Image 1: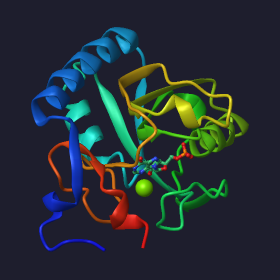
Image 2 (image 1 turned 180 degrees about the vertical axis):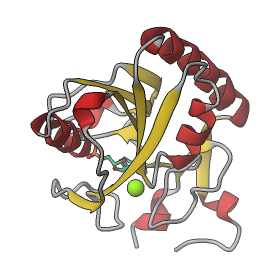
Image 3 (image 1 turned 45 degrees about the vertical axis):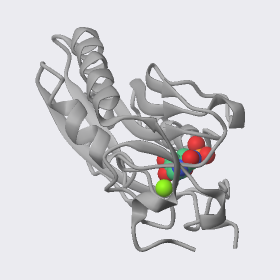
Length: 184
Ligand code: IMP
Ligand code: MG
């Protein structure tokens, strides 16, 4: 059960607001270097990436366009179903861009591997992945991120865009959710 005060549902803070800001700045610098002089499309995967993405693009100091796709692989729970549904699509020619997919967390990898293959099928030739968090312990798909913020342990995390059942996205830090919140 969820508390009235969302902070009471957090077992521990994993990554502070300050650590997030510092890392996002570093990632922005790396991405700026990698895409200098290239036609860049930053493609956010909704909804989880929107906080990270909005901070990240302001640390990218080279021209870019911004798009979003919405996919769902979770039925608002904590386990991946492996089924990816496209809820919001883009209608641009992916081959005209160097695409940087921005994700909140790479967990099983099923969502990103589906999305990457879809864009490749549509003719994209240059796709890289930036993820704020990487949970390698749970990887099922053969996929890796080119830009990674933090590796996290196999625990369910929320905040800074990441949700549990649509809540906690507005926490300014990344924290581990108390298991009793989702195991009723
Ligand atoms: P994947 O397909 O298993 O890699 O799952 C990716 C998506 O699952 C992410 O974009 C998140 O929305 C969600 N997800 C996976 N692990 C967590 C977590 O620890 N907290 C919140 N959301 C998660
Ligand atoms: Mg989610």
